[in-house]
Length: 384
Ligand SMILES: Nc1ncnc2c1ncn2[C@@H]1O[C@H](COP(=O)(O)OP(=O)(O)OP(=O)(O)O)[C@@H](O)[C@H]1O
Ligand SMILES: [Mg+2]
Image (cartoon, rainbow, N blue to C red; front, side, top):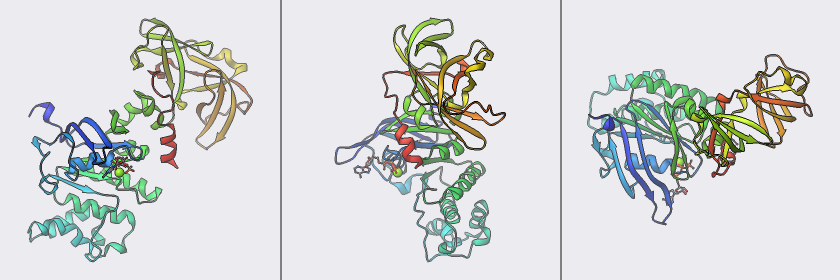
């Protein structure tokens, strides 16, 4: 097997235009590595379910091919594909007990001695004690685990999960995220998990594909996406970013020097995904937790070599482990800064003049031709 073919799920040029002419998925290439936990993350309507359904064979692609392992399955019906799907509405059989719900796939295939396998599956999802209960006697999280066991008992190559935790309350969701991750690690099967919840994707997945309007904007490990966003959508949709429009002043060695609001900022060239011609525009990004705040009276104590911006505290909210500040400055009207509560400077209150400063190494640069606010509203709506 060549490396190129070793992905468990390989989508090549796959797209979907529905009968009404609407293109839900633009031609897409995607390889999901064998045995990985892969998340498709994006706002409502971006094409996640459509993509998943094309992998499952429930939706016919308008173009492109689907491979599972070495096998091309583009024209195979769903039941001939080595995949199983768990949906948000897990639709257990209400009249069957938990044991029989899990045994269903085996019995349908004419397998008589199911006890050992079903018991193993119930142990895997930690429901051994509940085998003789009916679905309505279980909690939402327990029912969801039955749905996972029911899908896994068929030993699919790939398990597809479409917002499987969507119906659960927040606390249960968090528990189930860890639980699903544990199950995936234990069985080693490739999981493709669809979610609109960025925290969920980041907690669970080895690799996340961020989708926006039918395209994959960026793909990478959660830390890589967070630290090195390549588009404004990813920068704003995953966590919070401060984005400043700046002009390229000079390029010196490994660095780009930029002009912003009368001051200068340094950006490592390797962290800039834009062309950055002298005189051209670049969006400079910095995450709120990477910034330190110093009262203007102490500005002389800030070490040399740091990027700095002056401003005034517009708002602050104390949230226990950290304090979140909103700073009004010449380069950005609402700069967000998160400060850990170690030793609090009592002068840092609304109205105070401050200097924001950070290591140039934490700065990233994006193409200024993009919408600076892309993904901001989507992230807020999804959080609501
Ligand atoms: N059968 C269909 N005919 C026409 N348009 C469709 C059809 N199914 C889905 N769409 C449209 O395609 C787009 C993508 O839908 P899809 O269900 O893949 O989104 P999603 O990312 O899963 O969203 P959500 O998070 O809300 O589940 C949406 O704009 C949707 O309205
Ligand atoms: Mg969906």
